[in-house]
Length: 568
Ligand code: ADP
Ligand code: MG
Image 1 (tube, protein in one colour):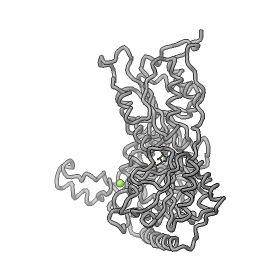
Image 2: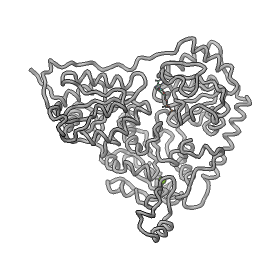
Image 3: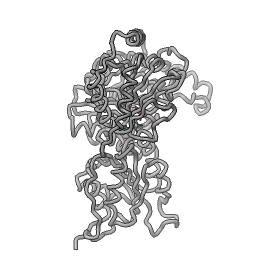
Image 4: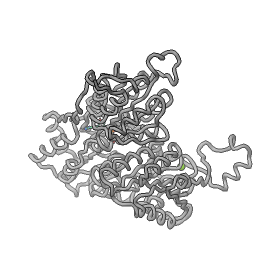
């Protein structure tokens, strides 16, 4: 009789479900699971902290449509994944977390790292389960993978008691399950589609909003067709940049506030009317705006705004339905309309204001100057990871995306510390699928600090990631070296350092050189250009450019006071 261990069963079941990547930190009781996973052909990436491992695994799900796995030890290891599970579920990204837990016969006795993990995970996951026996492990893993990608995607947690890992069972008693197919595709009700088409056809100031649901559902070809055929202005949300290229003439990102404020009909393609879209309410939207909501999740319909039409189903399929509808009654929104004139004027105006800031020659540089020089040098097809308050917000407007699923940032949950994990995931996916694409991770100095030790992971696996730390010596703002010294004269740093401050001129690039990558410390545009060129020229080595900017550099003055909060 052939026997199989719990660790092997987990590894083989994951492989059967087409899981390609596993991130984790090994220890009791799950080391054997990682070893078995590697033996089963799953790429195992050892990370330095479970939180970053979980972020990395979640980005795999977003980028590939099949969940990545995060493997962690019991108790503290498990608890460090809560941020990652919540981030994935809030972002609607599939993810599988596997946590080792205490041996069953020691439960409630104060076992090593004992914690009520299944209960704790429930709040962050679509499914939180512990297999009742070794025999059902393949079935439980199939259900978790299926649950993570069917309907609205999200995270699923599987708890593995420590004593399961090395326990053996007879193969013939195991309930093996085949690979679960991709999610079934649902289309919208026909009447809702024609209702939507007629609302769009009568719109005076229409606007298409493309969200990261569209990115995830790989609807780029149909959406591109729809934009080209209809002539409608469109606005991508942060992570939907690139579904239609940012330089498409119909992209009105540079007139975002105006477009939102005056649109009379909004076609909402896979984006929630949450804080990112100002809840769809006045003062950022018209009171009478008609929203055509397209989403896979019925419970999302009507949140904050009662939609004029509800198209429930898969975005790609529904965009196709709309295209079919408009092939019967062609729609071509005139490019010489008042609405287009107004949007274009606003765009020109806003672009001029950014340009002025970008071309300032004074040192230290400001955010706009830094992004201007980066933009000139980075390849159009690079994958951009971005986080940090101002770094992410200004970078979003200054750095264009031309391809879908090539921008990853703090997302719906506004999570800082995701950058390095996301960059590692993106670099692995690029390595396997599009090796010519570079990953460029642009971080604020504070954001970088959350997972800075993952630089060692990057160097260990020799991932050609370029990290650019936009360093303003602090969170939001910082102090320059002179003011710092002056401040310290007033006493103990613990009582005098402003809460927003980080150490001035911290040499983050030396973290990269410590592990064998290339580090650059830059103060001027010329040094920045040289460092970016040198980093990109080396196609294999990881590098980090630490760019000093004015610690008081801010976003350009916003027209409306309610625009000054981060991400608004
Ligand atoms: P953004 O951050 O870009 O505004 P959100 O994360 O708020 O986007 O919204 C994404 C929406 O897309 C979610 O409401 C989710 O249910 C939906 N979604 C995800 N996948 C699909 C799909 N395949 N088809 C339709 N809607 C989807
Ligand atoms: Mg900073």
